[in-house]
Length: 503
Figure 1 (cartoon, helix red, strand yellow):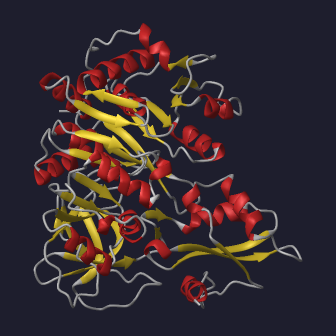
Figure 2: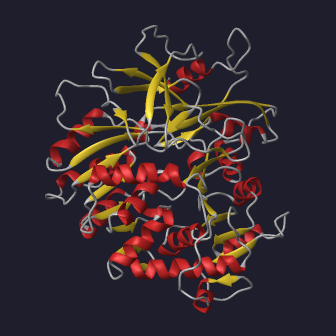
Figure 3: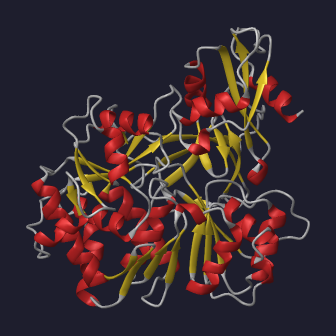
């Protein structure tokens, strides 16, 4: 089975069942299946072939999901891009991935014209007239199935770009086999049925969205796309939960905490949630305890795994000891993966000589094919970069990063990428970026040494970053120093910067 087979099978079983709700309408399984075939034929006319990459640079919509399915039916791979990315960053990803066809809006297509991308061809999702193939033009293509390309399970299905330590985003290549190992495991865990109503809180370029879409489709359930503009609007999210009567919710803990503390979730009468899943960052125990108490009938799951492995461990939250102060464990291996600890003497981490502490390693069916343009991962285990402790029952507890990577509001961020953007500013000579605070209070603090007598203002630096980085990487604070702290070997002392940021 391939990813696109999931919708085809559900459409054959229940063509009139609702599959997808979005800001642009509702599609049944039969309609989604037919529309995906039309998209596939249109993309074929634009030259897309098996093994090609097709970019998706647009907001969440039923049309975007149909485009994903259409891409897969040609044996190609889709590359979802942050709709809030500046054009400069998107251009770099398109060039890196050698994308010639992009599903996007008319305004974004206009931004990308020229500049070395003359070969780029577009499918426009938001207008019915213009110089490019538009969505209304799909009516001229047959909704009948196309001949299925012969693909191996290890064929590339999609690429998710993550923050890169060298200042360049890295494309994580996920195969059909990688994705299905997670999807089928999640479907079995949740025992998904056609009566389920899934929420889709995460953006499509974030790996959490894979569960929302494909596990719902595998079980013949429906999924509601939550627009990006509402993702961290707590009162509107809670209103949506009430209106849509979701049975399965999956998001970063930050979103749930906002819904509880500012959206009135804990004041709502009994909700139909039967499963609430969270991932991406530790869930502060006091907030998790409140959620556990308010949803006594729901199963709560803490899922863990970097984009490179999707989910590789899981822990079900049952009862919580009133005396517990630390986050719940990340649990045991999932999806047929194997996980273990490797001892590490990484610098800039808390020293711990016990044998039960080390870097979490993963091998198995969910481990990525590799990074786009780099050597394949092959059968080699993936080193997560996360320090963990193995508990007496064999499960694992997350302790923190062994390198300099930061987690801010559930997003994994390499400081090097922000620092590279800052160093492009003509008035900055040295920079160092750290995260201060945790959870909703987390903020990005940039320490800089300026070449100008009067350094740039925070507003000027934010504007500079906005032209080069996605919104979640734009700094929150700017501190100008005469010089940056260094370790004895001359390296940037990030521990000292974190102390300054905390102070």
